[in-house]
Image (tube, rainbow, N blue to C red; front, side, top):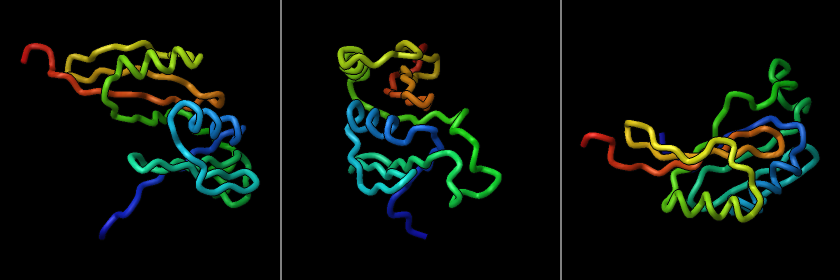
Length: 128
């Protein structure tokens, strides 16, 4: 098997709000859109598909579920700079910048639909 691209599909209440958030603050571009559906892409990241909750094309057991408990993480360079940029753009930081003992530095933001987006930078673990 050869995987040529990865996509995550997320059910949200307001597709346009999440789409705008990802386009405006994370540099995604809209690749396709239809009623209740948007596909967003970047050359350096997986695609994100946003689906309106309740769409009949979704499996019946998933139609009304929200993308809860999912964290979409992006590994970036200059994590502190990205946090500053997002703050300056008016984005609320829902989990402040922190460093975990295993060397992960991260912070999180939450989009208008409650989707959690995490930015990560790897550091040398403490004690190494």
